[in-house]
Image (cartoon, rainbow over all chains, first blue to last red):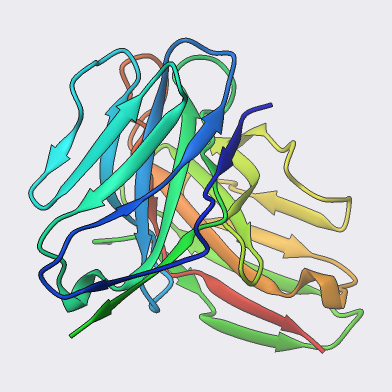
Length: 116
Length: 117
């Protein structure tokens, strides 16, 4: 079974600075998707960024980028120019590409605090 | 609707009671998922619907939990004889399509917080 591990229960960053959130996963599949979701106090999970395992190029969405290391099974999220609105829980998630229910497997999350 | 809608937002019940949680997915989304998020944890998969049928219910913890989606749109998660350990946020998500080529993006509701006293 696939597992996702987020080793940082909490992280903090100064406004305008850069922070990196870590995620590792375990799978025997060769093709899959990886995601970072943000969960503010409203509880709604919001997709931040998505990476397809067959693509070597790291995904980027504005201030958010990932460092995808397939061999190491590592998928970290970098937030540049941090803003107060970035404060939230961040969850790393895995999804296989074929077969099964295509359910997401989530890590336990990292609570990000942004200090003004 | 514009997004995934879940009702009630909060539900407090007593141990042993029956509870229903409702999810109204984004119009046209054929795939619907239920997840359970306990305090301090990430969401855990419960059940997945493709259309009206439950394609994967492997995450349901026991036979007290049941979900339906009779017309392929709204889904109801039903919990019988609730226990204190059932207290959690129950998240619903929907997706436009699944299968090869699907991007896998799920759109989530704001969840229903269930508290069992």
